[in-house]
Image (cartoon, rainbow, N blue to C red; front, top):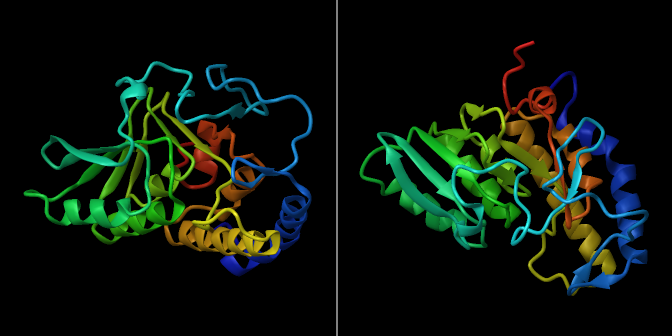
Length: 247
């Protein structure tokens, strides 16, 4: 953890969390939930190339995909996670992460006619809690995760990626993070919504440390609105521990 502990990271982000809470209280209610006040121009579309220091892009999972041609048509991704066999012990897990998917996919993994060695991932994200539960199951069962060139893993998907015993991210694959809702009901008093968000952030940070990922990657998630995505550069994937640093 590069000299940091979960408790230290949590203390270090306390001021930031209170600031987020204050913004939520002051922000507008939009799309049935709370959103942070927005300042300045919108981020560029996700189709625009990503450069160091210019990594936030607008993100609508039904419209926006990685700025490279995916190996499969991203528009045909399932509405919820779908597990299919590729070859041998390699399987593909793709689609949106819907509440209840963790239990359903875990049952499919455990009931597969041959042991899973590696999961190829592609997902626009979704339920954080399901991603954490499924990621822990991957780690407990010694399953590696992989991303292919031109494919993407956004929002809650990087937590699935983190669960792999090893993580192979091809050059040209796109990994991105942003803010999440953690409660099922977004029509809550602001102070309750803030409490849920802070608890959820703590759970994610503890999970990331368990998986050998530096929880400081959350600084990018916490500061990127839910309608944008922060695309991690290859050097950041190495810095935060998603891949081995070969430098």
